Length: 391
Image (tube, rainbow, N blue to C red; front, side):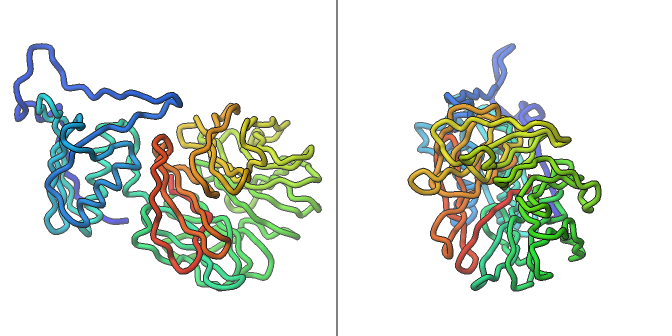
């Protein structure tokens, strides 16, 4: 983790340097929302940066709901600067020039400092968690029937391989910030492993007869949902992170796949062919009867991912090609947001990471859901897929 020295001075502590306000007058940030309940883009005009620093700040802010516009359209003015490994900015209200926010960061690199600055600005203007300093894990195909697990910054920079097994790998995900869980053929059969990043230590989570795959770790990092076919059919199971306490949740002969957890850790959403056509179902993490999650206008849903705020479930639908949809967690009308598959929510419940392209040439992309703005992430080798955003 990069060490960052932070110096943040917010408007409340700096009003003495802002233009005088009338008695009782306050600087407030208006936050209009669109028809789906997403925050409308906050329009800003950014000056003071050039080159990579300028590009990084503007790109970071887009996926946090803050968009650079010409001066005449801006509601807020951002006067930023970057020297060496330091980045700083002042945020002013465009009309009154009242100071809304001020921050400065020094990090291991200028890029890291700008990421920290972007998070600070976006959090102040939107009230949502910053994402510019987060990381993702994903699968990289290195050759026929070979792949490795990688980690990078959320925008694809700083990528490095976590494994070097030269075997089939799948479904990497996070168990807290310091551990990954994934499926691998390292021992000849598809087993599920946990992998401590600081030490490289690996331990089996599931080594049952048959296939062990699609691990998904609960938000508290203590339990793993997974698909096992130890009894003949692929069904949904839950166990502790060390593999103990295995509990079978479903008993479908048709097959289940792709579990994900609700942010409160109480429920699991998964794809199932039980009863015929593929549908999303939700079941208590402690067991019980599953309920079908309606995804109107999006047939054959799979690969669900629950937004951290609990409101949305993103998923893949095969309807004239792979497409990304979102649906309310209670089910209902699904809304198409991009062409692709493997969606993973950002911590701000606004942006998604997903992949698209042919089987052996997939690449990752960022999506700002409400505006449908898409930006490709730098590709590692030939094919990148199955992203998981660290929450």
